[in-house]
Length: 592
Image (cartoon, rainbow, N blue to C red; front, side):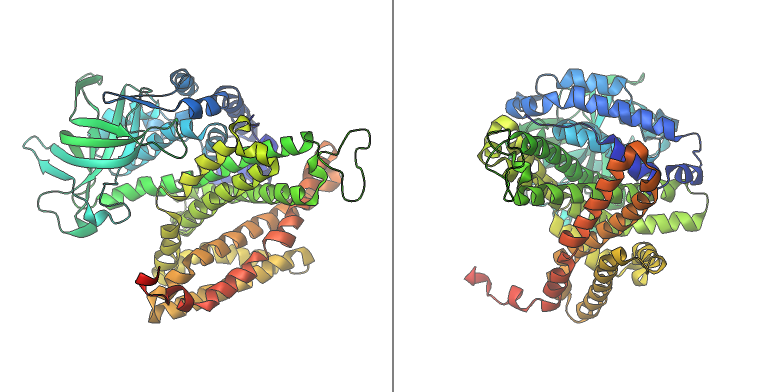
């Protein structure tokens, strides 16, 4: 049995106490989004996740999607759940009010998104892809396309996809073969094959709006010759209803390791009618609007799965009796002690808890920047927020998803053999979490993006948004010995940054060899900063906490565990980075 209840108290802590939601909504011009309103939204979202989505998670995995003559059927209960999802307005939460959205801050939207991923990641992918598509269309589409498509996508009547990958190209989209031929009426005819298209065909919505990358006849070679097109499954009629079937067909669904209730499809475009989104040959600019949003969302997916894995493992550890505590029977009235008394089980649970709560705090920080980069009145503040999101996007995507898989596997270990069989649902969480490290840019690519593009960009300007506040916090709290582990790890990160910047000038392979270790090091320091701040808030609140004393004490204890047991990994990572590429690149290809 999978166990999940929305961690509302911790979410409120992150929103209101750590990141000061009252000051944040005032700065982005939404002072009416009061703390009470946010709390009521989170509470209702938690109920929907636990009562509606969680019961469909295991059954959806068991049944999976079915492909029948070009049509995909989602598992039992998904259509009804999606209808309730739309009726509740959950897909429109953080969308633009100009097209029917509720316009709530991203920091609220990300918390709700986490709940959906925790309860049922397969289900969450359907509206998640749509939200990303609306951002790309809103940022780059014509007014005519926006008015025709965005309202129905935001209210959930229509859904959206992103169609990039082809059989011969994934990361290297310059090898793309899909073609777009201009027509006299201003439309285009799209032809080609796409694979690995999440939610490319299903029975949840009236229409599916595909954002497709393709080449114009006169396009330059490589990535500079890619354009984006909007291609609906059904061509809308004049009154906005789905009309004639367009030339796009689902030829198969993938048989996957996990996420079996999410349809991953192969699509064939046969002179399908489409419309240009953005400028010709500038499709990657438009697509990255969607991909960057999706990369942050995929990070939230890793966090969401890890939260459910933690709750399930903690429940099992308190219930399962086996052996006696090493220091003597802790529960002498029982035949054996529950396994939560054993240090190694505690190590696993504390590790998962510390990472999960740290990632939630970090996601909240990044979400505030998502709001600021579009809504802050001060243009300097907007630019700073945009820079911060740029540097943190690969970190959040890769770190959170790496941890999502590692922590769900660790939680399965708490169950022992019972975790490996299907009865408890733990092996599903491990399988579902694994894809998050791969799609929307494999994590190795995220690491290369961090060291190869984001770190050196604008003479290191992006780094300032992270380095400066961490440095300021350390200096302001220099007298507190609990800040010393953060200070040491941050100093090592600064050294690693300077080292990579220097050696990569002579040999770019040195940066590539260090990239994954550097990203993990960066992420650990970011989590360490969040935990140091969280501990400071908890220590200030504890004396007058009354009924919340247990929460704040647990926060302080978990912060200490992170500093003692997890943050020191930065030292080993720094050693690995300094070792360079020599032993990594020494073997000839044929020796493998």
